[in-house]
Image 1 (tube, one colour):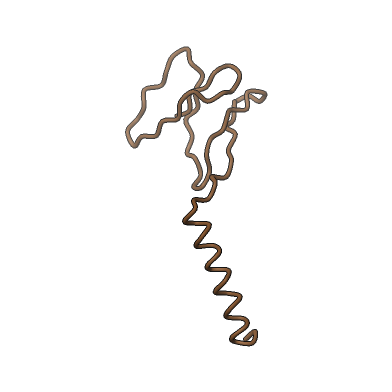
Image 2 (cartoon, helix red, strand yellow; image 1 turned 135 degrees about the horizontal axis):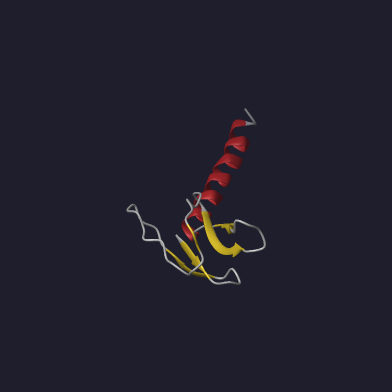
Length: 83
């Protein structure tokens, strides 16, 4: 559940397996946030309001894994002659 103000600024993001009590008099959305996305705001210019999602930044560990994976791929091409 995303609770936001009248400007679309997120006040709270809550996740729960249980049914959440829906607030009265406070704008909110109930959504399933896609994997690797984060809620950064709410677009209040459309009806119904829609969440504004952004890709989650990669962790330092994931950046290292990606770099190592790329390095191994490049070495494989060099050693294997492109085969």
